[in-house]
Length: 285
Image 1 (cartoon, rainbow, N blue to C red):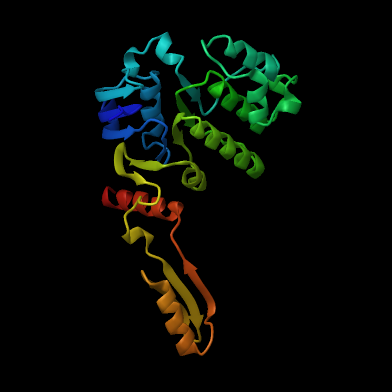
Image 2: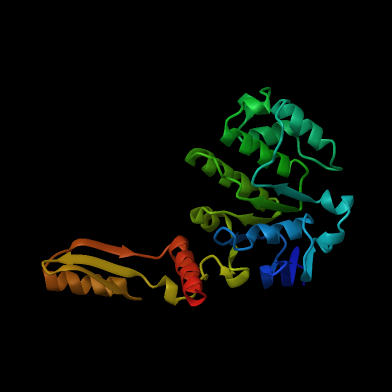
């Protein structure tokens, strides 16, 4: 068996009396895209910062590419790519100059012009970063994260500030990295993005991992039962069922035609996520 690229066991982080992470455990396999989901303050950023080597843990174990991030040296750091929520770059150089500078830091790197094209900034290559829009600067952040051909890529809210077209282009870029064998840890508040890009997901709330599994398994089978909704003279009706076609057929027969405002709603990842987090908050109110 190949060792996971990320291995986390009973990870804990406390700040005085406040517990930010309370014993979470998960693996990310080689070449897998894993989404870490949760509300603000749940512990996502703390987890990623520990795995990136920027924050020390209070307890538990963690390895990334077989190395404890707390003791990762330059050779280890050259194998990972990071896209932070914000870069803090001054922006006094052009896009091409910035990428060319960063490329020289890595023992192996992608072609600068190819990376610029991949993030959709070819026509802005000679433009100073400070003159770019917020979404364009975010694309520079992504480019800097992948220029060094990382084996492991951390994406923390990568498409914040992207317009819908730019988000779709970014998704294609990430799919290309995945095809190349890059292992990816993604945090995002866009649940459709997680559903599109990820193989598996973990949901964090209150510093605890409350669910983990394949994207099409999160929440369990009960959370994925379709809802049939229709209207008749007495009002709006709903019925949750594993056999929506049978319910629709029954309604069609009884109504002697298609019922008014008929809908078959299949829960999305966002619906399931909101139910999971909502139930956790209710249980721990």
